[in-house]
Length: 251
Length: 359
Image (cartoon, rainbow over all chains, first blue to last red; front, side):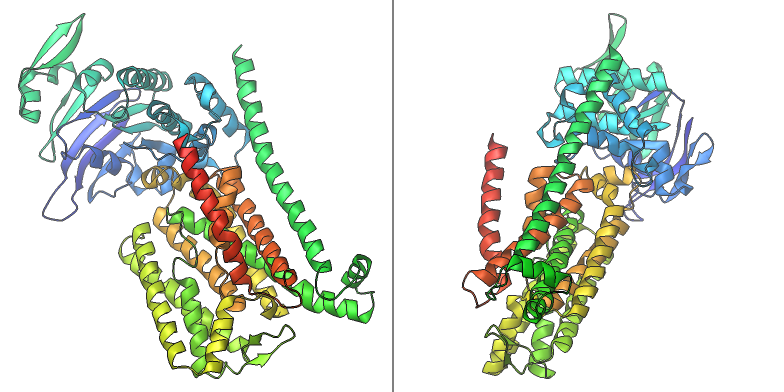
């Protein structure tokens, strides 16, 4: 269980990016963070695992405040996938093995390699596991980064727009993969996402950020034209198609 | 079926890792063979058997003298300097996220030149004298090395201080290095302008770089510093690998990025400053050795660091042997040779890189 209480962050004291943000995520739950550009979604994600240190607040995982832990302990509890991953001349296998870094003392153990190979297999990455990640397509690279995050064996997975650079097929593939694996492993997922329809399709709850604060947080019931209109300043209709909600812009 | 897939993936990875280890073994063999050749090659005609006897101290007096007092110290200094400069350059390129980072581009070498120029011109280290190779050298090498070390460490401290104020960002470190490099190059030029012909010759000779000027104590100090630095870098290899995936990803993996950058810069600068203060400016080794090895072993620092260190040692050894043999008995300046060999190789790698990217 992830509980975030009274999270405050601002680059300058007079301009708050996050103001008393509070929400919780159950194990195995998939929560979407939604809001306009500049609303503080990515900043909030980075505050949760202390990539950026928040000025106030607590981030409890199973009732322990991870903001009081050292970096390695935080890395054993949370894994973060950046919006844009950097390619390098290391193989996909080695990039995934990096996920074991918080656990490696001098060299990886057999269990570390076994886990990496299990993840490669589960995510179907065998075809390019020995290719350099700077030669991979955007979709392949994003899958590798998610695999690397899973290799950290986190309790909470933080994803910053993991589908922003992907085509429709890869967007669906990546989100389905994350959804299946995290539910299976009971990992709480917090995902920053812009596409409301993808969020509706894969997420359990939705948190809208507006003016540095939580505007509303809840299940399908918060996905209303009124909420979306108030947050994005865009008129939308929320319709049902094949028993699934879809958001249709009206302008 | 699943087990077969798993076994395949692991086996392929094992083969891939074995290739990298094989590359390192080949480098070790090449370095040993080159070192053996270097110890037998030179203007004094000494047969291989005599050299081998001299190495264990049982040959004729002349062979023992030439081998143990002249050739062996040069070779040892080439090895430890190559290891130190290349591993320091490799780490600088990683932590600064810049492929052009090295002790030369960050102003450490220029800082050392300035220190040497001060020692030669103002502190009485600059009376020149002829040595066996008809070159000029400074009369007080300890003072010159000390001043070179102090000024190059000053450059390092300024870079680190400025970076600390700006949260150790790579951009700040590089820009500070470029500015200081320019400042010290200008200051050295001014000292040269006001120095006598003899002093100027000594300054210019010092900046050429010369492995032969290192004493046994210098070799020991440089060896200990290079080895300690390499061990420190190897202990941080996973941190450097994590940085390859981006700063935020590295923090998410538990890396204290600011500390890794600041300590890494301190250790690599200290190593480069120590070596440069003993042997003068040796260009391109710190820059090109890691780039060559990136082609063979990729950016995985578990293998890139030892491979770069060995390539640095090999390149410096080859360059020095070349410098000693090409117009023997005159010994050409090693800095010029490394630049001559390094620059075209670097251009080749750049163009090959462009083609690779284009393909």
